[in-house]
View 1 (cartoon, rainbow over the protein chains, first blue to last red):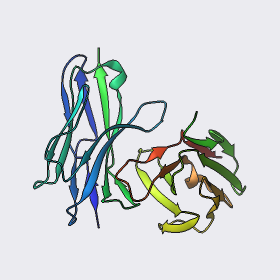
View 2: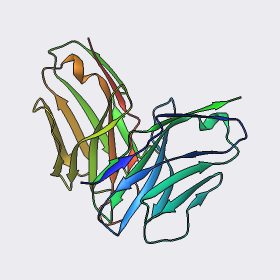
View 3: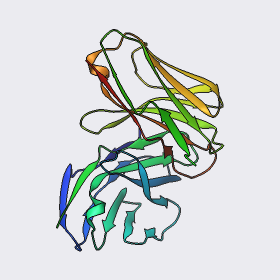
Length: 114
Length: 113
């Protein structure tokens, strides 16, 4: 069974600094997709970034980037120039190929300190 | 335009009551989901429907019954509510056969007293 692990239940970062959130996953599949979702206090789940496993290039979206290490089954999220609005729960998620099942990690609560 | 909507957003009820949560998506997706998020924020899949057919049915008490009248709607009915049912329930949708993410509704916070 596929599992997703986020080993950091809580993290904090100073405003304008950089922080990296960790995610590892377990799968025997070779074709899959990985996602980071953000859940602010409003509780709305918002997609931050998506990575296709077949792509070697790491995905980036403005201040958000990932470090995807397929062999190590690692998918970390780097937030640069952290802003107060980045404070949220962050969930790592996995989807097999075009499958209908998404597996979520337990989440990391990120605090941004002014 | 709201992509995935849920009603109500808040629901407070007493133990033993029966309640329903409605979900609608206007994205043209063929797959819809219900998740339960507990107080520790863990997201647990409950059900998934593809084109009105149940495809994922995790270990959930049979007091929970999903209903999909068409592929744009997935409702959740809960019988004989218990204190442990208090949580946030999320509806989500996705399109099978594509690599894309799930889109989530705003969530329904259910409080059972």
